[in-house]
Image (cartoon, rainbow, N blue to C red):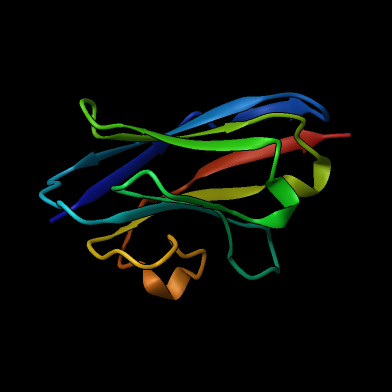
Length: 125
């Protein structure tokens, strides 16, 4: 069974940076997608960035040019580098995975079946 554990959240001022990590264990996938989602109180969970085993990536329009998703296969760890953070990006950030590939790694949470517990990101104005 896949376990995903996020870390790296915290509090930063607007314009600051954070790097989130997602350590995966029990991982036997050859073909997969992994993604970062976020959910603010009272809002729906939204996809931020996704990556597949071929290195294809997808980004939400709101984070393009500021966020970078990557994976260290040797460490089985997914990362999300977040720069120029904005106050409205305050949310719980979740890592997700699925042992399937698509034309492009999806940002739809319904396409993922393994989830971490989340890490809180707070951006102050």
